Image (cartoon, rainbow over all chains, first blue to last red; front, side):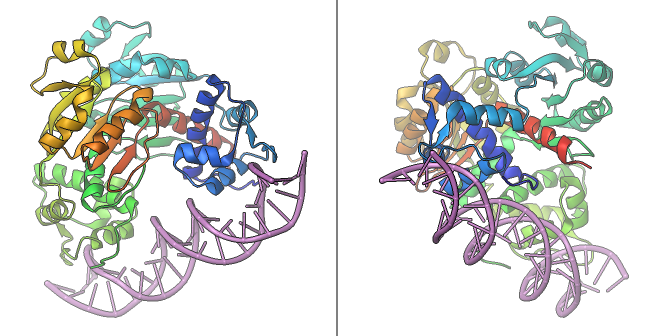
Length: 213
Length: 213
DNA sequence: ATTTGTGAACCAATTCACAGCG
DNA sequence: CGCTGTGAATTGGTTCACAAAT
């Protein structure tokens, strides 16, 4: 087992592997090889093995990886078991969609708060999740020990919202706005600009480059 | 100017730069340095200059880049001017949200078709965009010369939908489902799993905890 | 007989450092 | 001078190839 720092692309792929394992488990498949995983992810099998080696040796040389064993290893190493309190900032269409997203609910992320600067929305949106005005972000994040924040606000509100999350002690931010949030000490950020992705695909296709993710 | 193939990270950053330039133009800023761009994007200024050098020399050594000049250069090289016919497959919450997204409408991607396997949805959703049943994807993509397809379908429908797009001659696919679409000859793919992104941030923040000194 | 785990080799991308130009 | 553009150096990531394991 390697003990160096795990590269970001490896973390991304490990998360994808985890996702595949969930499906295999539902299918009652109990073993899978690096080649098979690679095929499903569109990735070289060597890469799969190297990625998995970052979290320890667990393969069975005869029959590949035990699905349940590998999955629980991933859960342990990536701390995917710990239910992590999560909140959504911005309850426009995207935010409201995420608020009630089944997969998100099932996936170990407990969404325990929603925020919006528009009080009307807080009062009218139908959901079991408690909703608060945006100026309470820092306070609620602190009080409820929220670890992950999802930004679904208009771009001009993104930086301010992120600051409030950070002030509350957030650990990770997924930013779905088109603004760019820069990571600060101890806070991981993923900037995921949906419209931006379309532009990127468009540009790539014009340059005639066949690429994934 | 370099003439080698443009690396994917560079294309991504050039698209981000383009986005910043749009804002600067609105602000009536007419020049910007690599240092300033780098600051806004959270990227090293050297990297910005190298990225821009992939699309040709255009900088003004005294006062940085001319906003309008750089922008039109990007438009030309990344073919962002050509209105590219775009369609959305899957008119659930996410798909319906994208269908009426203003920024998407403004951004040079003409959404000219929506598809869903549920005929009810096609008849009830309010939009100016023409909607069709999913089994007409290939035909309509061909007929309307649609270049970009956005997948907002449930994961189990993603691969089949992508096949239909490819059969129609699509050039690029942005896949917002959790399934993985692999690129085929002449077709670029971006897999953007929204829930997956949250898992990645979570995993990163957990690993950071252990590695930060 | 397969399939993993990993050092070594290779390749890609980022950063550095400085020449060149207004 | 300040800022760009770019070879060179460096860092980081992927692929290869083979030993170890069962």
